[in-house]
Image: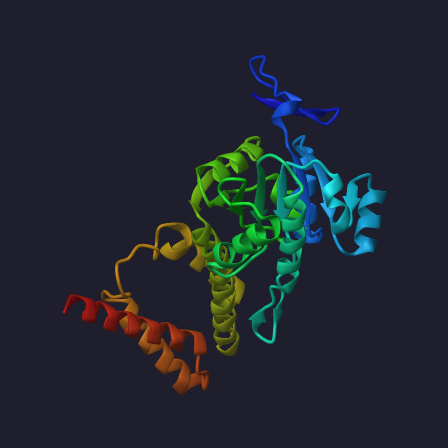
Length: 315
């Protein structure tokens, strides 16, 4: 069995006499040291990489320094001889729209820093951003402020995170999958080398595919929670044991145990059960329980729209 250990910041792989040299490790700057940034940086430190945390909040930096970590303000980043920069800057939703000003500010500062550096650098976006952001905003700003060319002077990747807030560090240390969206092959290979000590599948996609995958990931979770919350209201009204019913559904429904279910392009849901049962249950709920079941109604509506699209494409 392979074992690993960190000795004097050097990761040693103990397997058939194999040893990873210190030169194989990277010095990483984590820009934005909140929950995601700290989990990312501390996870890389565990694997032997050298990490400097960067943030605009002095209290965050003070806390990190108190834990023994290297941390600095953005204007001091140029003093660090880093190989890769991970952008984990907040992209909050304000009045229903994403706010990218913090990310843009961090990119402008990073671009100015890159202008003064020699050699190939890798920039990795881990902040959740709408599809097209890395290509249409991140790269142009980096090129403008650095006066360098993406894909030639520096690499760019989109590396979505799947960290639960309360278990962020644990999730980063034991990922179930790593997705790398790359500008080019060199960018993707460079980032994969940083992750080479993690024993999980590493999947390569385009920048835009990585960006939208993270949103679909979150929206799927939100939809599933909303679905069962809506069903919980129905179960409570008819006084049945909700937990018992949901546990059975998680085992009986193919959508729960078959990872391929529903993701292939087979068109609208059809057959002898799904169309009739969704409509029948919606009508029953309205009449008997006075519950409009908004998500179920939307599900039926989306299926009708899908039917129209497929009919138009086949005609």
